[in-house]
Image (cartoon, rainbow, N blue to C red; front, top):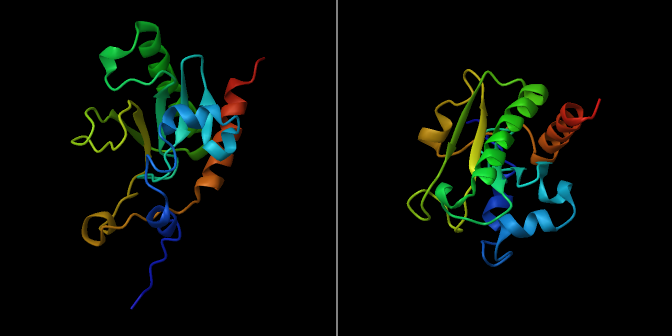
Amino acid sequence: MQQLHAYWRMEYIEAPRYPAAMKRPFTELPALGDDRTALIVHRSKLSYLILNRFPYNPGHLLAVPFREVTELDQLEVTERTDLFEEILVAQRILREALRPEGFNIGFNLGQAVAGGSIPHLHGHIVPRWNGDNNFMPVIGQTRILPQSLEATWEKLNAAAAKLTKAP
């Protein structure tokens, strides 16, 4: 029998569930003032990119508006424009750092039915590679991530700095 080690899974199992740890994590994390601890990769004027703590794939980013809303139509036009620009920035960062072959990009809208446990809005930017998913998520109900969040943050942060450096 082969052993499968999903070292990150225990962190997920033991992690305090919101709202126990933070009442409003998507507004509280940017206010920490420590982007490494918060796993924030990039900030724009009205939104930011943060690593998903429990990703589908390495580099799975969330694009989050600073102003807390639950629906796309609650965003002002400038906020929607900024949020979608952040999604494009995410793609550039991920291409530079991880060289994915494609992306899944989308929003989960609606609280419980869409998978959200905290009322908020965010977009998912998931890098994809040919053959990145096998039978494990379907049959074993286990995701295998080959890189830690911290190592992924380092790569993405370096790529973000390189891409956003003023000439």
